[in-house]
Length: 417
Image (tube, rainbow, N blue to C red; front, side, top):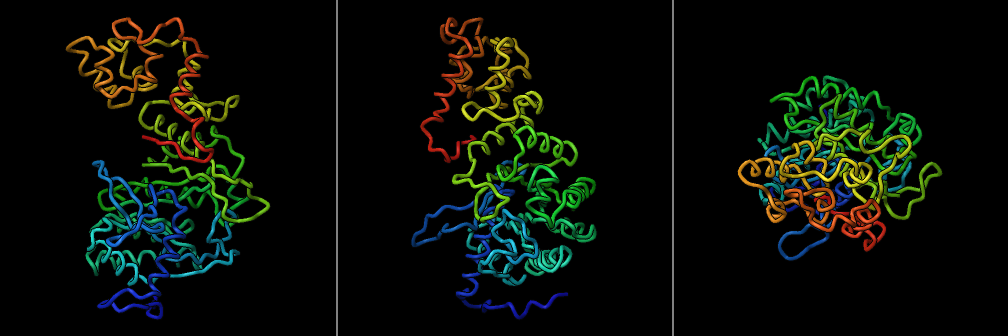
C-alpha cells in the first residue's frame, strides 16, 4: 500500500482550496490531448456552472446515450520522454499529482452536482509501469468500494504493466484503452523510444481474451496521432483494420498532431491536419458500418484520401460504371455504397419499398442526402437531374461545392454528423 497522506491538501468537510483547484487546472489541461475519450470542453462560463478549460469530455453508452466524464490525469509527472507529448520528462512545465482521496473527492462532488456521470482517468508514468498501475488501481478501488461509485469509468492502461495488474484494473472499470500512439514500431522508436508496440498489443490481446460482464464490459479503444510521422492514410487505415479484426476494438481515435514541443524529429506544422483527421474518421466509419475494406478506399498508388471529397464519394467517382443504382430494386449492400445514403436510410428504403415504389420525395423524407445521392441513383428509372450532365468532372465539382470545403479556413474541423 502507498502512503499518499502527504499529498492531501483539503478539508473534506469544507471547500476545495486553491491547491486542489490548481492541481485540477494542471491535470485536466494535461489530459486534453488524449482523444481516446471523445471530446473536451468549451470556454463558456457564468454565474452558475462553468466549462472553462478542458476537463469534461463525452462518451457514448451501448444504448447510444451521451454521458459526461471528468477527464483528468492522475499525474503529469512522467519518466518517459515522448517527443510529441507536453508531459514528457524533458519539458520544463508545472507538475502536479493527485492523491486517490483527492480524485475521489472531486469525482463524487462533481457527480453529486450533476456535472458528470463518470470518470476518464489517465496518468503519466511515475517510477515504473507497475507502480503507476498500482496507483491507478488504488484510486479506482477507493472510488468503487469506499465511496460506492457505480458510474462509468474509463481508464488508460499503462503499457508494460504486469498482466495481474491489467486484470485488477479491468475488473474495476467499464472501458480500458491502451494507446498505440503511432502506426508503426519504427515511428514509435523514433518519437517514443520508451514505448514499444509489443507491450501495447499485449494489453489489447489480454482484454480481448478476458472481456466479459465483470471485465471491461464496455470494451477497449485506442488512439493514433496523425501527421507527426510520414505514414500515409493507407498505412494508418491498414493498422486500424488490423486492430479491429484482431482485438475487437470499439473505436480507434485519430488525433491530429498538435505542435506543442520543439524537436528536430518533429514536423513543423503551424496548423493541425484536422481535415485529414476528419477523412480518417469517415473512412473508419465505412470500415465498421458500411462493409468497406481498406483496399476499396486506398492502395499503394493512391495512398491518401482526397481532402476535397469524402471517402465514399471518392470511391463512387472511381467506380461510376457501377452507377446509377435503382433504389427500388438494388440490394442493401449496394445502397450502403451510394453517397448520401446511410445505414438508417438504407434500412428504411428496404422496409418501405416492399409496400410501394419510392419517389425522390420519399427518399428525402427517409433522410437520404439528395444533394450527394442524386448523381448516383434513379427512382423508377428516372434521374433526379438531367442525366446529360452526369460525367465525372461535373459530379466531382458539385460534390466539392456541396462540401463547401473551399469556404472553410485551412485548419477548421469538418462536421462528422
